[in-house]
Image (cartoon, rainbow, N blue to C red; front, top):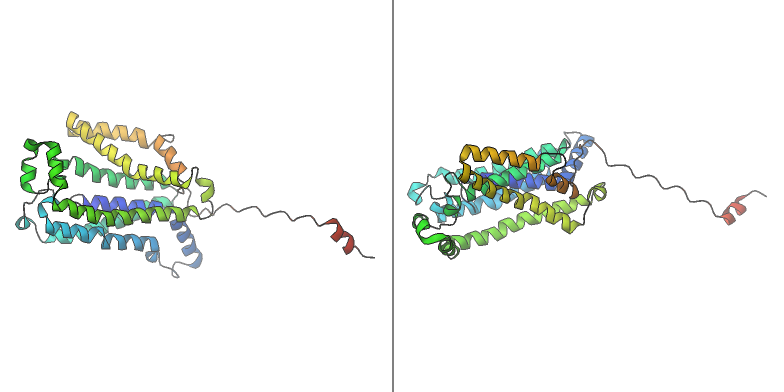
Length: 309
């Protein structure tokens, strides 16, 4: 349901987000597999990995292929004008790249979660969504948003003359926008339900209550801002820097700024991440054992009656 150039990037972000959302469950699965023996339960049968691939194969991939057929110019960000300019292999590439991107994103974030570096797993999602938004906003030549908001080649060619407001209005009244809106409701709605549901499910596992520092509603809002709003703001900032300073200087300045915001141990992003209750310990570390309650003292009457004589 998005242009072919951005689809693998989005899929990588989705896969990584799914893995981080199910971080506690993935650690529990790894413990149970090791406890039973690797031959008893295959890691490939992990339900969260299977559901991630099923989601990618049933929703983003086919809806994107439909839009590639319905409007090849928009689906290729106007690299092609019509069906004659689209190689048949693009449809195959679209579907395969979405599934493969989701798989790679999930496995990369899962690896970090299992070794106790959950924050770096979260950064996989940030990287995927940042590249997605940068492609849609800036593109490869600075006209990303113009290509995204032009329903046909003529609208893209006339963008500079008709202005941003007229261009957005024309796209919002097009059939392509209607298809994106309908498909987006199903694709994004299902995605958010899965992510929130897996977070809530993980918060019910042992040890989660101590790690969750804020109410669940607030934690969901923080998680959403960290996965979607932060990369979007970063993509806008990167586009502005590249336009002002050029590609090399702008990319360097943005990389330095992003490192300051994301990497220090006491950065605001790390602090907010710590509030959500996503595990940051190694999967081998078992949940802390609860102390056994002390036995209640025997009532005085019972002690008297139990004495001999």
